[in-house]
Image (cartoon, rainbow, N blue to C red; front, side, top):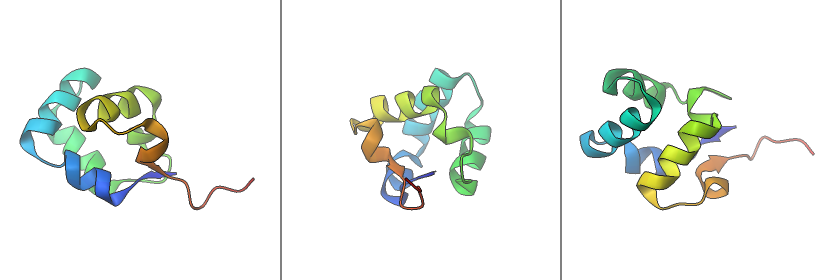
Length: 72
């Protein structure tokens, strides 16, 4: 699972990154690296990150994650 590209565009600005990085207790630069990498099952998929992203964007957690590759 990865974060949807539209969500990455919404959070990849200084104001949003500052709020989210403060919620996660990481630096703005580290959050930027995670946004750019957007690794499969990476740091941004963790529940605390999803909650912070949801809080900042107003988007439900289920709508943040791109789960097209999930196998059921």
